[in-house]
Length: 162
Image 1 (cartoon, rainbow, N blue to C red):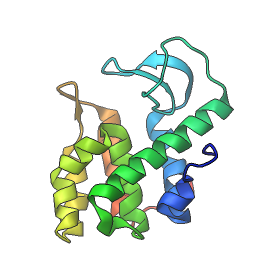
Image 2: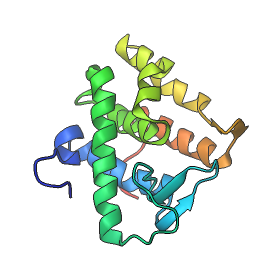
Image 3: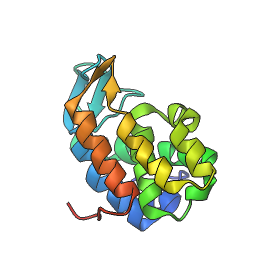
């Protein structure tokens, strides 16, 4: 789904992690075929796309698919740049990429989760997901649910089926 010359999601993270991401991220984000403001006021479109989202602009399902793939590749590459030990770790890489998709790759790379993964403390890194349930200074029920799912994914307790 990526444009020519760019890495595909499967090439970036492997088939298993790609399947997990393509199953869960749209569920977490919701898919809205127009530009809108998210719960903390960020202009968003499709399944959590913010980079070029235009408030009120309509998007097709095909456009949204291309944007999701591109966004996931970008975040996966960011995750792998700062936590290279996650390469080939299907569930942990998928969970870290989903998390980075939500908070940004730079925030992920500065997180205690990334530090723990780099130190080989995978259980501790996965546990960090439970802390990230606030946005705009308040706890959001959707983030509580998302982080519980991402933690289960990180710990290998989820599969790619919906």
